[in-house]
Amino acid sequence: MSDRMKSIVFALVLCLVCSSLLTAASSRLQPVQERNFQIDRRKNILQSISLVAPGRKYTGEEIDRLYKENIFKYYVDGEGAIINPDTLETPEQSGLMPLYLAMDEDSRIRSYIIPVESNGLWGKIHGYMALKDDGATIEGFTVYKHSETPGLGGEIENQWFQENFVGKKIVNPENEFVAVAIAKGSAADSVADEKLSNYVDGISGATLTGQYLTQGLHRILKKYEPVSLNFRQNALQCRMQNHEPWCEDPDHE
Image (cartoon, rainbow, N blue to C red):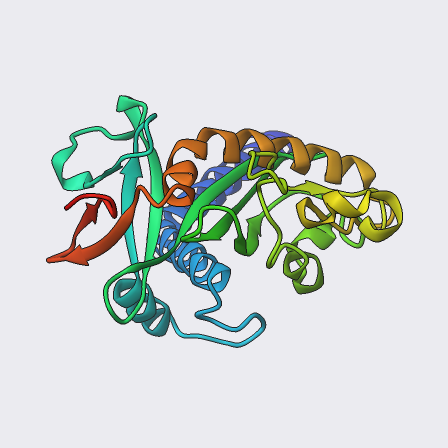
């Protein structure tokens, strides 16, 4: 065998060995990666209702404990009814939408958390938005995954931007749904006073990211409007009993 052929065979064998090692490493690391991804999502859900502090280090066990003590995952239908996932075989395929319920010490719903998936300038933006049980006021907003430019659109993952959403409304003064939007620059400088409660400050140099996220939030909040409307009309006064939400009509005698 010529020296050239030996070099080619050696290179092929080396490539085969390296690819096998990489495949084996990836397979072994996949459960760890999936676990870390789950912890990060749970941490963001908890952060949206201020049960974990941004920037503080938490162990996976701490996140799991806080999540299991305070958060319950359910689904909602097109009428805004809360449905136990244990009664469903394939909830996503049934056209139902996931909803995370946060309980207070009296097992009453204090807020509900909506998963956010929006287009961005360079890819999808994933996060969570929490609303209080009045069905109108934003309690928190977090982003756990995005592809936006660092220092520009990437600022959506930073605390200063996300805190802008706290206390904002998804309804106008007439209690009509309008969602929440991101202004171009300072909201106080570009939005009429009567609309300020529905706008947050934009990111300098990231106008397109703000526009895409505004459109995505409007679309998502509109999908969940039936359950928000139920809360606004006090049609839902829900508590948790034996891990099952039960709701009473406040007008029922």
